[in-house]
Length: 288
Length: 251
Image (cartoon, each protein chain N blue to C red):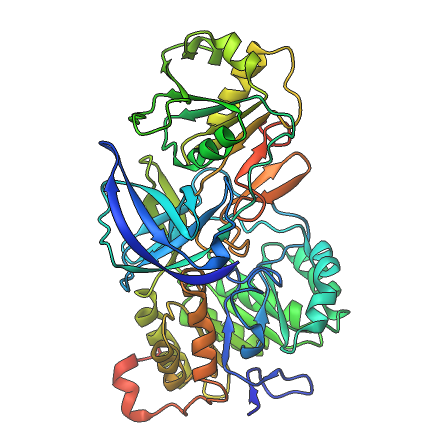
């Protein structure tokens, strides 16, 4: 069954399954080739890409937490040109669409990335990863700029702390889909007793983001929402679809139990989002 | 690389700090070599969340002997999920007479599987423990164990001391060093500084740093174990755990 996960246009992204990986979880291509059948997914989202190479973080990069973890990698990647050069042939062999995730830090770098991706037929959509500090005005500016430069569907992943003003700005600027949202940031002590900042992963994230998805689905019934955060089971993913998401992105459970991603994808194969149900409004709260 | 199930057959306490698990594994793991490990998930709970990195210390047919800290409880008969093998085997020279294993302020387990393999090939093994509390009575008697000291000082050669330092370093054909996981670069810098003082030069394929960071994925996808080399980067889960310190970006 075909599921459209971006706004209706001549280049809408249509997938067979509403389940995909979140950026940063599956690498750039075939890292999980022995453990996961990628063809069961609706799409493949690349690890974060930047125009120039980014080095890995130094020091503590992972802090175990109660039922979760804090991760700080520095988003290392060899730069978008090298990644495309290295993985283009592999992506062409994929039976699922490839979505390139771009880290948005500076306008000129984002523009160069989009110019490169727009020429690549192997990449079917672009996901912009907005920084945690971005303002609503900047959100609108970046998305408008990106949308003007690319024919490809533009998915926008907003930070965990995004306000309704941020989401409104993204919708106004022409985002083709909203990915809700990036993992929250946190600070925790490592084994050596030092404080480390990073993103938090774990099942406890899901109820928080599920509520945001529910609110947004009621506020923007025509904007495709992709629920992302804390999914650890088929029921978790189904909850996002019931809340109004058209698709879901699965993150850290893939590292811990790789088969869970495939199981969720097989279980939800072809399942469509349910229309927001007014009887559930009280569960998600007001969107204003 | 596969995800397989394994069975904890037996648990044996070997000293004050460690226990050994005898784990029956899938045939895909019976070719595991020194330097490689597996990522284990015990039970169904999300706490602990991360898989444990299990370093084998011995392989006997389809039974891996895993050494773990005594603080974690394991029950014989438990079925565990394993992902592996993780990493590349240690690259030993073909002509090898003596290997120095250095354990600096951390758990020696990532290095221990080398011992039976090296002794079987008539290679002498010296285990140097620096600021490390690890009872070695269960190790084969052929292993020379040296207790070093870490003291105050301005330079590595002042801080890191043991008997016959120059002889120990000069005699070794290869050296493998394991250090605390959250501060590898500072420790490897110190080791590099020490060996630079004790030897005229440090050739390639001689001094290896062994990384054992926490590994969320183990397949090179999450980038949590990526480290900087001179002019490139490397993922410790797929290209490590041993990195030639002449290639590491220590500056």
